[in-house]
Structures are given as C-alpha cells and as structure tokens.
Image (cartoon, rainbow, N blue to C red; front, side, top):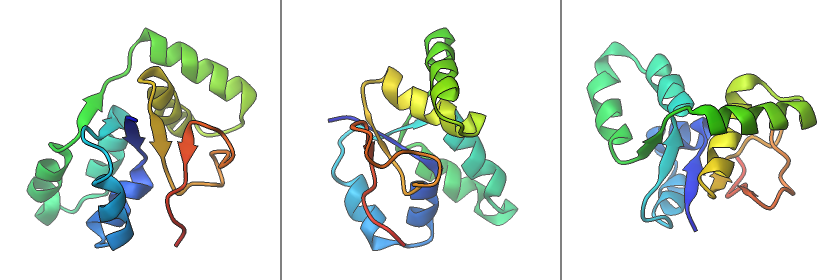
Length: 120
C-alpha cells in the first residue's frame, strides 16, 4: 500500500519520535502533499533549513492539480476541516494511498483510507 504522510507525522520524526521512524520504514515510496512540504519548511528554523530539505528529498512530492482540487471540494463539503488538511487528504485519495496522520480532530479515524499509527 502507498502512503501520504501528514505534516504532524513528519514533525514527530524530526523531533526524534521512534514510533514515527518505524511507521515511515513500512512504506517503500513515501509521499507528501506540497502543502505538507510548505508547512514543514515554514516551521523550520534558519539553522535547520538545509537538513529539513534533505529530509524532504526522501519523499515523493505530489503537487496540486485540477483532480486534487475537485476531490478537495468534495471533502470540504462533507467534512468541515481546514483547506490545507482537506488538500492533504485529497492528495492521498488522488494517489490511491493511505493518509498517515495523528490528527483525529480533523480526520475521521474510522475512514478506511486514514491510518492513525500511534497517539502521543
């Protein structure tokens, strides 16, 4: 199965969470939305920019396109979540991937295309 990783999972990894390391290793070609890349880079300090960019190079970045936009619209109409979260979920749906996240506030944990690998 393919996986798209949410921003919180990458933040956990960068913070040294071993559970995240194990989860990332389960997938051969990990993917992230361009939204996740932007969120991670915005939160990175100047001192960590290069290291963060090298880390992000390990992921296939899925850019926005018309199909993802249409899926996002459907998600937003059905679930009242923020636009960036809807885009990330739509990216996973578009690429026929699981969305790996800890965000049970915005994403329905019972959805078949969402995986909550651990709780903190």
